[in-house]
Length: 99
Image 1 (tube, one colour):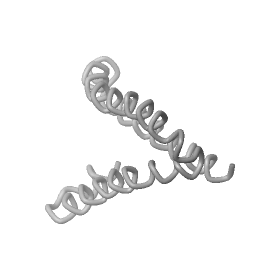
Image 2: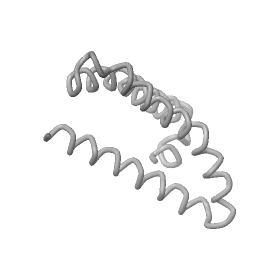
Image 3: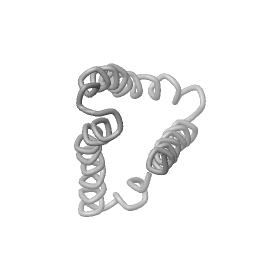
Image 4: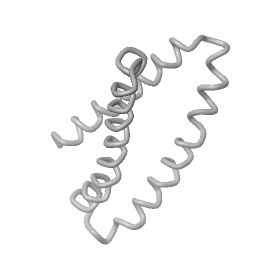
C-alpha cells in the first residue's frame, strides 16, 4: 500500500519490492511449520494439498478479478478491497496465534 507514496524513487521502490518478497518468503516457510504444529505430520500432506489448491487458484484469479472490477468501481475501491483482505488475513493470524 505504500508503494505509490514511497516508491517514487528507485531506492524506495526497490525497498518496497524487497519487503513484499520477504512477506511471501516468510509465508512459504511458516505455513508448513504451522500445519505440522497444529495438526501433526500425519495430516500434513492432505492439508497442504488442500490449501495449495485454493492458494494457487487465488493467486491466478485475483489479478483477473481486479482487472475486471477496476473499470466498474475504480482503482481506489480495488485497492481498498485488497487492503481489507490483508487486514482480515492479519487478524486471522492473530486469532490463530491465540488459540
